[in-house]
Image 1 (cartoon, rainbow, N blue to C red):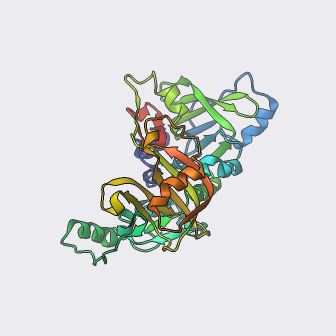
Image 2 (image 1 turned 90 degrees about the horizontal axis):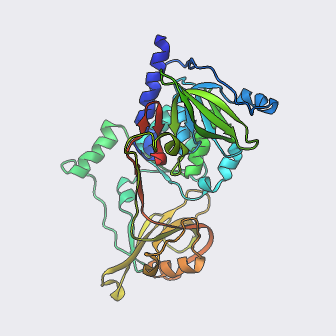
Image 3 (image 1 turned 45 degrees about the vertical axis):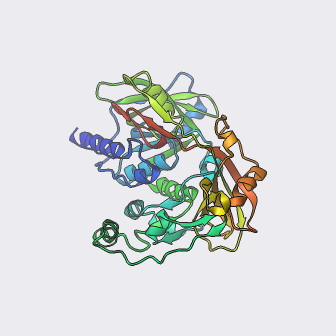
Length: 406
């Protein structure tokens, strides 16, 4: 009994550390302190709709587990990997048919971050995936801390003169912070520096490591439906559906973690209506933006740039802006561009799933890019607003919300 309580408490600490709406990078740096794994006392029960084909699949999915993680995205995989390294029996559910489908899904290829912070890089070293990340396609070590937050500026297509960056002065606040990062925390070099790498590559690496962990199982094509019973000791009996057959079964877990994104089913079934005053507030931005990944032909160095458009040949007020960021990979012309949509579209309700046409992207970007710059071969494009989503609570008993679900 003592060992079981230790396992449960350690898992709880790990999950709570990764909740509260933290970003994917912050999630990855959370640590688990669980002890040896143990099965919950509640026995698994199978729904009356189960068949012999379902029974055959049970070899690859736990009937009981310490932690059930819903969603095999970056948040869910990071949590599962850390729990698995600490021996916590973890089951990850994902409705996508397979890991290959997960890699090919729009969610894995469209958008996503491209920068891993030093803290997350240290977490990657701790769990043994840092070397694999360095080998990922297009991964680049970035040691220019200042350049990350203050990239070069293009105003009406003209590159602003860059001031030489002096050595950090430890007597200033910025210099002292930088010195602390470099010396006190040892954040220097490839082992602890920033890594420029695609989020999809990061997910691939973590997914591969999860598959090696003996206490972690990823069940593809399985959907969390709801919690059907909560025992007095906190054990949850969850209904899990097979997407292909529609059959369902009961899986028992000690903790449930909703890492299933903005449209979280865990949040909607286990928090809304069950937590007094629960709300998932959405704060929408006013400006409408467009983003795309494309081939950008120009003569500037491959680096990040801020884009600015001013009236009166650059001497008037700012009337538009954007950003330009190299996409990690082998293609030197691959860039991700962001730019404001025309003012006349701001009050509309552009569907985020819609793709701005190339002609509109070119129209908005042309005044902000150097003369002769060419945009072509757009792999994806989206409208978006700078929104903020936050749940009023990220824990209810043994259920947690993590990442965008929170």
